[in-house]
Image 1: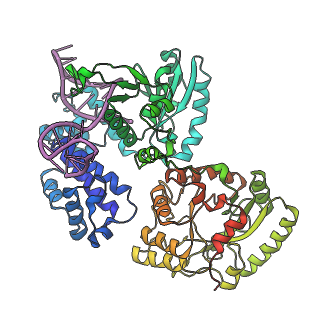
Image 2: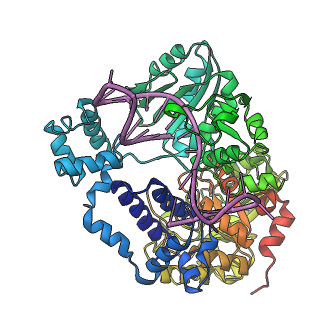
Image 3: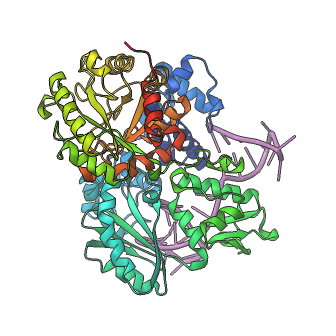
Length: 591
DNA sequence: GCCGTTTTCGGCCCGACTGTTTTCAGTCG
């Protein structure tokens, strides 16, 4: 049983508990456990096998540890089986619809016998949902719309897509009179690999005018809602945009609040309470003595208290004895402790990169000549670069065999002479063959400066075979960088099935670096695996896998991914000078 | 169900919006 399966089971338990109207804090305990497991890169299975104490993990207590052990050892959870016998499986799915939570799902089941989305569509189109107490015509319509939307599948947008969709909207809003400040918050600002919707914060003289400006944007397909402080629209692309007008004295607090993550905010508020302060999107406030211990006063309204901070993020964090925290690490993954200890990392930045070492040219499937790629790298200020075309196994792109590679080296010699401003390394992206051997003769591998090894075929091997295949390739003395290690394509293709923990251990042992492939379709390795790589001391290379000169500008996506894993320039090999870079990669015995 | 040099019991983040109500529950982020 893998972590991802454990997570699915525990999440389902939480869903079912909600429908059963169990203690909400018990539900939250399951959600918190899921969070911990998601953040844990190595398999809990191994910990269980070793007899380790799972309760050492945050949010895992005795009960949860028992659950996990039961899952690992038997593959089942008796408690879930019991609950699932009582509750129809389709009920959980109802809660995916906007406006339907556990209470409404339960009522639909109790009163109308709804057991699935299909059932719900039927009774809703008959008008029977509107007749239920607590429901109405509007809720019924919303459910029907939600079902249609759900069926046309609303996946999250890749960060790179959003970066293309947003600029016209931002420009439009910035040009609106009265909007004096604008910032995109949310997971977009945290540079998460995918984004669900967009939160735009603005400072505006006239909230109405700002709202009208959004509604009047040419890309808007429909208006979802408009309140006093929030306007929501859906763009024709399907992307939902929420505009929030914020008063200047609350700007920083609102920016923190809407940047999230949710987990970060929760921790922030708890921290405030420890200091007898209250944090909201409006600022940091004192809690008046009389309402201490009575968090919810009459009708839930706590007395106001005095404003302590709110105008800037720095001031809000300072009020809680914290340094300003980069959005990428606002995930409650240790950033508070690091700030307290004065040990916040100096995260790697795009400008730290001194070379790009994964790119293609017309020698294989690139669109630009070798010299054009060299010029493009030099123009970006790189000190060095590696041309890494495909090896011959990728026949469809006419990959390079030994003979073709020698001819490429001749051309590299010529280009080197013409471009002394940049060091051009001889590289190759060598296919890992089905049996784990490399797609190039050893004597040629010996003569390459940079050897990237990648999986491009037999993506469907089972875990045992796939892992063994990769481990064998990593053990090759000339393997230097493991390219796009999991092979995933975001929203399109899942990762190959490998034991990532075993692989990272092998990388550490053999001194092979892992790539952060910066292409926004890949972002591979992902953040949680990079986190593990850092823990294990595996060197990291951030590279673009560019197939044309413009692709070289995608490096920032890889850097942002690295920042989410707390990587500093020390962790990223290609922030070093070329001699250092090569020394680490090649610092291994000859064949 | 988890957690604790303030607590092993009694807490557990905060506010807005919507739709349904006539004082509020449910949902969402």
